[in-house]
Image 1: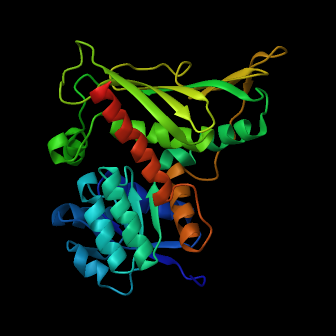
Image 2: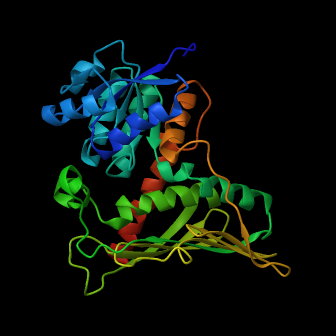
Image 3: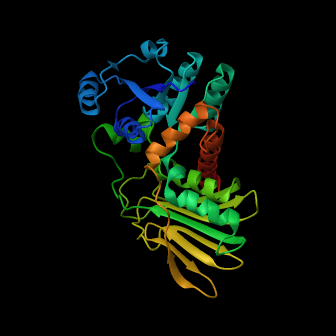
Length: 332
């Protein structure tokens, strides 16, 4: 790029596609421009065009991929289409931003990475959790040993209560395995895993167990997953991902223990516990933009040659942890 805006087509204009289009406007710095919305539902597409202020619409992805005025595509379609659409985009010479999870499995992710590499285009993943303020805050704390010293143990908890586990309207497929949807381990856990990897480091070994209370109404998806993750560093991380328990803010998030102290960081803020401080509240600095805008900013920067944290190679590792978790649940 030589200063011109990266001309972007949004593929799939549901919740994610709408949020991405709005986030380009939030950035407002001219690095990205949404020039077209793509969706097979023409009526919905027409409505979104008016609401989002994007004049050009198209129901045919190959037409967009053949257009030399499109520099990149953001794939916000259902997960089962990610691999096919990303490979086609790479072969057409378009840079690719793809929503999480980047693919249905590691093999698909590898196909996407290989296609992008062969075509010399960027493959990036819109993994918003990595761009939340708590992620960069804790990453710095861990790397600097601030307050707590060298890590000795860690736990991460994330969850909500949804006994029926489903989504309304156009998003219903998210929780329907027959349409490429998944249970909470893949749909929400991949956020938790990606952010945890960014904060604490890479995962070497996965052991996972699933639980389902009698009140959870579905038997075709997991309700609660408890996992022990051994990192490359040797650190053991206990991870809880649940769709059947509403975890209160003071118990959700990260608990990090070190040789000089401990901290809890989550929706209720960050508290430090040392020999001198017994629960001092520390501010987590606010971000310049929303996490959705920051992931788009990072994508544009990566296309320009400054690599961000959620590349295809990186987020294939998040997907590998999810896949290993399912295998561990299956086999014990």
